[in-house]
Length: 251
Ligand SMILES: NC(=O)c1ccc[n+]([C@@H]2O[C@H](COP(=O)([O-])OP(=O)(O)OC[C@H]3O[C@@H](n4cnc5c(N)ncnc54)[C@H](O)[C@@H]3O)[C@@H](O)[C@H]2O)c1
Image (tube, rainbow, N blue to C red):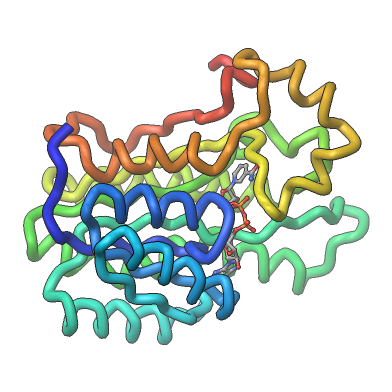
């Protein structure tokens, strides 16, 4: 795998969890990284960890569902850095309500963050990537997109619907942005993060037994695959979906 020079990567939801691990993995590959998040303190912490790896960090306090702000932030990066090489659409929020409990506002917010957020950032960076004649977009979906909500209740149908939408977006953009901009998706299975730890706790043994590799995943398990999709040269893949679930589901 060739290592890029000081190229620019944007990682939404980069303040903690899987997004933070992806930021650090890309920083180790030499990318300047712009983590995007709404958690200000964690965002600054991730930015200083990125800088401690010897590359630039541009922390962006921004809500992925805000079309205008996303486009302004993308323009700012292009003005300051001159290019955008990698976009990782990772920001998302869970939705634990069932159909009998959920409100219209809950549904709209889930779609606005988990699906429209991916559209907003892709729409903001695609013209620059096309103009460069190169770019990689990596969308973080979920095994829930194909297999339905998790039995642990960490997220239910609205989340699964948004994540299935992310796979449609991935395949559609792969077609439209070919041949130079490659668009792929990752479907993580159970990954232990600050968000999921408490939810997994009561079912930990059962959950672990359901995973062929015999353990719950870590953010780094996802980051290593995101880093591959961002850095591998050549990469003869676009519109693909990679499950990172330790063999919890075999397709
Ligand atoms: N952890 C798992 O088991 C698991 C499984 C499948 C898929 N995923 C997916 O992986 C990704 C990361 O999950 P995680 O477990 O690290 O979650 P997390 O909650 O720890 O991290 C998500 C990050 O996104 C940020 N975010 C949320 N809404 C935002 C918004 N509107 N604008 C900007 N940032 C926002 C959060 O502040 C947070 O820092 C998500 O897309 C999630 O759906 C996770």
